[in-house]
Length: 83
Image (tube, rainbow, N blue to C red; front, side, top):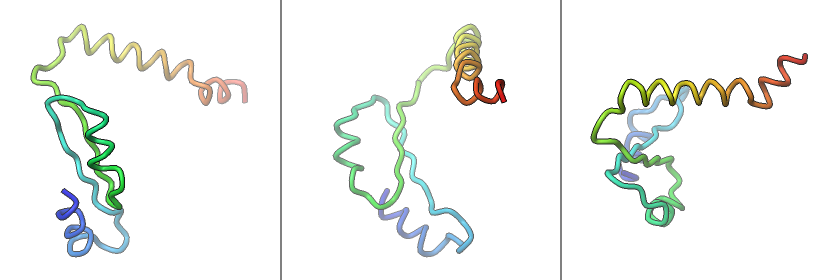
């Protein structure tokens, strides 16, 4: 991944663009492996565990509800409401 990101940054990225970002999708998450494999790279490489099955409609609704509650109670949102 680092090889491709270096090549892309050097040959495909225009001066006004942000550097490329690598994304590695994994079937399981291992923080220690990610830490040691990606820790000292100059390029930004992100890892994320993917799901083999889509969540149910109820699961998606619950996640959206939780995100809304967290956003509504965030310190930035509270400060904005008092200004």
